[in-house]
Amino acid sequence: MSKIGIILELDSTYYAALSAGKNYPDGMIDVVKVVDYEDGLSKAKTLIENGTQVLISRAGYIPKLRSANISIPIVEIPFSIGNLLCKLVTAQKQYGTVGLSGTKSLLEAAKEIECALSSEIKYYEVNSAEDYAAAAVNAKRDGIRVLVGGYDETRYAKQEGLERIILNTSTDEISFAIAEAVKIVDQLEIKNKQNEEMNTVFNIIEEGLVMFGDAGSVRLINQSAAAIFGEIDSIGGTGNAVPDEWASLVKSSIDRDEAMLNFLQEYKGIKYISSIYPVHSSGNVSGAVLKLQRVKDVQGMEQSIRSQLSKQGFVAPHTFDDIIGNSSVLKEKIIMAKRYSGVDSTVLITGESGTGKELFAQSIHNYSPRTNGPFVAVNCAAIPPSLLESELFGYKEGAFTGARKGGKTGLFELAHNGTIFLDEIGEIDLSIQSRLLRVLEERRIMRLGDEKIIPVNVRIIAATNKNLYEMVKSGQFREDFYYRLNVLAIELPPLRDRKSDLDMLIRHFLLKECTKMKRPMINIKPDAMELLHAYDWPGNLRELANIIERLVVVSLRKDVDVKTVREAMGITISGQICEAVKPTVTPSDEPLKRQEMAVILKVLEECEGNKTLAAEKLGISRPTLYRKLHGKV
Image (cartoon, rainbow, N blue to C red):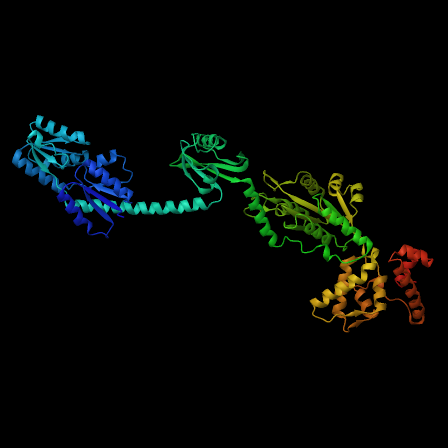
């Protein structure tokens, strides 16, 4: 496949072109000799079909080729001023006044050197085959004896009885034309490479893209858009075209030079998010680009991003299988929570600190249809009120001093198609409660500093250790917000109300801590277990876990006695002695106290830790029972 094709008619020019072409790689240049215009046009088309990128020919042939709508660049073989001057001087010496027939550029060049000649030149401009005969006729009429010009320009001279001097094409002139053609080929290849790269980028973009000219005609369409519309001829036309849903908007965007962003359109039952961007060239609107994407794909992309984010930490590791206990009150709460898992209604989990509210929240999420979505936990008490709003809802770039460049995605957005767990909900300010109320009602959020509404598909689980109803009565909590939260409620029992689970919980935490610390499993003696059962556990499961961990650390033997347990229980977080288990008995009355304590512990066990019922059976008041348990009586 030649990149450059040279079309010539004269033998002398043909051989000159062959000579000039030897300086270039084989196969780059194809020199074609033709007999007439029709033959030249036919061979030019054959060259183009075979991949030729640039044609070269004499000035007389170029208008003929261009009139046939040849689509590739055509380079004219230039004439040499020296050769032209030499031919004109020769003609004047022999015939006097000379007639020069040729293209406008040839005639203008001759006028520049006419002053070097001894006599006048008559000029006959030719631009088409019809002009050749007319030039010879006019030259004879003007009394000219000789006509100088190219082969075609002087072809009819003999018919009019005129002498003919042909401006032969030299090897240097052809070499100059080839050099110009090579430059064009290089530029075309660069442009083609850029176009290929652009087409590659254009087609790998998942969004449908259609590029329009200034009149609204389609100039380029990528594969995604073609899959939607099919092959496109023009907008508003018959057959395959951009439908009216977009066509009128594209024209309007071009006419008004205004972008149209993120509008919703429906086509053949499928919803698309579309945008139109005007394209500018030399300061003027030269067209527009239509971008469209299926709403389903956008949602899928969002879910994929959120899924990846969830892998970075927004997961719920616990399920209902991780909840330890066989007491009837606990089983009742688990059954209730599982029932709540099947719906999307808001859940409010209440209970004392350490009763396992987050464990229940994670279990509800993992038991629900949202289990593959993110689980975003927020401790509302741990985030300053001034920051909580931006954390929950996110913010737009520049929303406030110190805002992160590019803005920030809020936790509600990150929880899309999943669950957000708002722990310590009773700690948030009234101002934020009002915004959360809107989210609960509409499932839509707005970033700080932004005007765009973002829909979120999120299930809300809240938790608190406070009495929200009392807070409502005292004006510390919004009543409407409370009732929006308190749709499905679970109140988790404290550990003191499910003492029958204590042995199972102790074994669980012992195994966990011994395994973590790579220590042999320890055994707590019966009297030490009685002490653990007698305790009220105000810190519930969290306190129990801490004491068991402490016990594993300080215990030096496999069998743990009551003294070791008492010491482990006697240390609070602040490092002070816990009055609840502080030993106060003296050696003289210690045996009697032990017997009394044994009776009390046995009755407590029979009553499953219910101190009111135990006090009634023992015939003493509840305060007295507390004092005896704490060693104060």
